[in-house]
Length: 449
Image 1 (cartoon, helix red, strand yellow):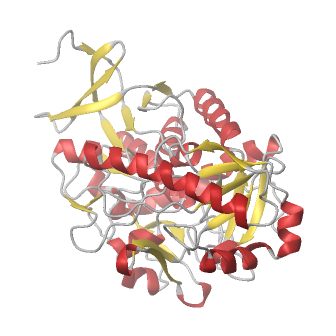
Image 2: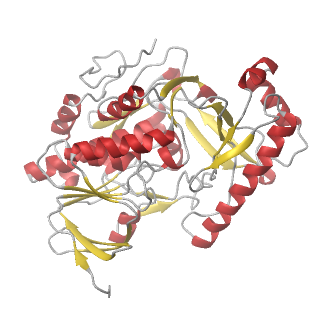
Image 3: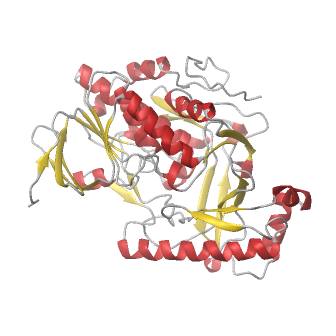
């Protein structure tokens, strides 16, 4: 079927997809120094959304006037590495999402390279998963394609970090497609602008003025709200403003149309900024996201499915493997085709725990799923999709894969108590803030005060 199909042998743990979740899964799996880890990515660099389109980690802190840090462990090493290069600053509680960790995405590409190589992870870039064949021994033969041809990998364990749940789809696991029940969240092409006089912008009124201008403008903006924030580079800003709704990222024709529409909208915004916003008179777009940002496509049915009620109950169950305090941030198509964002906050600035079963496809013996395709309802997903949480998912799945090999445990029968102990030892925060939260050697060097 596949001409000149060759095999990559000796892979113990395969990670499909190298976004922030996949990178952390590979780093965690490699931290044991016991197993051969292979990380496969279809683009030419690591990081997924963290390097393709965004420049801020959200989810490390709870929203509110006194932010609490709720994600630790290996994700801290990423931030510390960026901080060592002077490429970090903390954004305040922007748009109610909590304190953001702003970084230089181009530097982050290099940081991912450095961390993965130092950890001893094997990897292939420009390599795409195209097929999965379940085997009688409970493993999966994964078929990849790159410029060198077709390759097969039969790893002992697999972690799906593809974003679109490509492995789970091809392997036959069940999932919900975004948009089948509730409207799917819209897509966004981010863009960056240079030569912005930020001092003049702030003196004129900053975000408050921008909101007023957007509400009144005659420019055909697809969305009269959004983020335009300072970057690590002087006189540069990054945006989350473009909104493309009603198209599926799982349909090649519709995704193609979405990419073109996203770029069109970006330059509509550029014209608006230059003509109407103080400080932007001489600015221009200097970069667009590598691809349009996709918030949700497939959401796998897991051993546990996170729900909105669980998020709002602010409970940390005994089988949780990460914390989240982010509000539900649902980017959707509004009345008359105009897109809007609906926010719902976790009560009293609280947090909730995310059960281990949300990263295990239902019935899985040898596979995990992390990132935006994890097991959650639409509303819960809209809260728990921040990059700090997806990194924490990857951390948990990587250690779970190692534990399952050492103890010969099936993915859906892991001793979660032992897994939590391993996460604690690597600096993860698994308890409510102020309730004996672990602070270990990987605690950030940054001053949060």
